[in-house]
Amino acid sequence: MYDKTVRRRRAVLALLVVLSLLLLTAYFGEAPNGRLHAVQRDFLTVVSPIQDGANKALKPVRDLFGWFGATLHAKGQRNELLKQVSRLRQELVADEAEKRISHQALALFHIDELGVDDYHPVTASVVGQTPNIWYSRVNIDKGESAGIRVNDPVINDEGLVGRVTAVVADGAQVDLITDSSMGVSARIGSSQATGLLQPKVGDPGDLALQYLAASAPANVGEYVVTSGTVSNEASLYPPGLLIGQVTSVNEETGFKSVNVHPAANLQELDVVQVLTAGAGTRPENLSRLAASLPSAQTSGAAGEQLASTQVGE
Amino acid sequence: MTDGVSSSLALRLGAFALFAVFFQIGVVSELPVFGVNADITSLLVAFVGLMCGSSIGAVCGFAVGLLVDMALLQTLGLTSLVFTLIGYWCGRLRELRDPQGAFTPLLVGAGASAVALVGYSLMEFMLGVDAPVSFELLREIVFGVIVNTIVALPMWALTRRVLEGALPEDPRRRRRRRSYTTGGLSPLMKP
Image 1 (tube, rainbow over the protein chains, first blue to last red):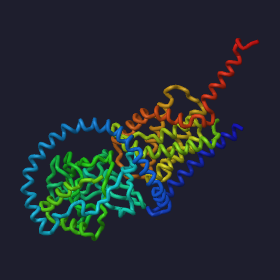
Image 2: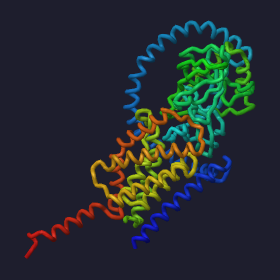
Image 3: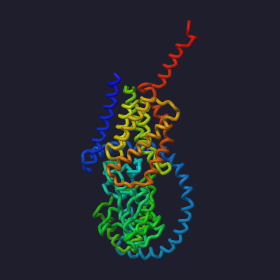
Image 4: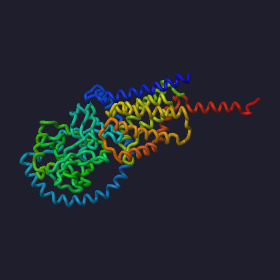
């Protein structure tokens, strides 16, 4: 009797381990459009409405716990923000004149009208988030039926959040900008020099803008925005979307890199906007044109976009 | 050995596991504490193993892991493998030692969390996922274990409450049986 129980217990364990390894091997070896990936997407299609419902039902609980954390966090942010406001007030005065000139130049190309609203934003709620350091992903409650496609950029009222990596009828998965698979072509606000923004090695909560020209000006506190181009081709991300702020500058041989702290609070995402304007659309064409202009001219459009990146409920 | 699965236990386990996974994804993962998130799914698997035995623990671990991987579009089989081992080992702990101490849930919760975090990291490294290896990872693991240990007691109480009465061998029943036996030997009962 005892032997039988022991044998059964071991058989169950062996079966489950082998099953897990088989799944792992098959999943890892197949293409993204393979059968297991398709099953996962189908599962997401089924559970998306449940996730959405659970997210709405559990929001009060999340808000309650979030309130304590947010209060403590706000206290720490207050002093820092006071200093920042003082500095930005001085910068604002200096930028006003430059902005007026930029607007006049941009008006020639009708780019001054371009705002986030032109990218057909779709507002979505975050209904799920990965709990570990290995993946920086969230699930949202809008999908193909709302016009969302793979590779659409995702923003919130603070800045760039990530891009859509998988989509089903009523849900989608978004890889955050801190995910190890991400790379965004970006530039420092005041500079023409572009680089590749990736998660910082050793601190996946932060980013590093790499491969900047050694002579490119970069100062702590400057804003980093999407460049809108990759090797003179249109990037997935419209130009001028705020990504973060420079926290330190590293001088390297031949290149310069800067550490960037994301503007968006990626750990507490609630509502995001997916920019669904695809290739060939008017905003896409205009943004490509804007990206090809010298940086001094695009700064006005960028500023407008940043100002108008307000997420509606 | 505590391997008998009643339909009541299966039903309760299924519903509770489903709720825990959605609660984890929708709420707990969005509430960082010390910069990390608690992981109630690994605690659930560990406590089910501790209450129901190794076979049920392993099956529950596999199912919960598969659910997590499916819902988050993660590498399929990865969380299942780690959780299966956690469920099995916690079940074996019950079968071999049957720990009854007040700190058992804390220690088991901490151990299960450590195994889950380290096991998951090792698997990711072996699969060659391009992720930074650093002090940050170590910090994440240490803080993750601490946060999970804090959450372990309420999670234990909740799991116990949900499964109470449907367990293969209810501890209350065992205590009652023991007291009856002791009562039978009392000199006061002699005629």
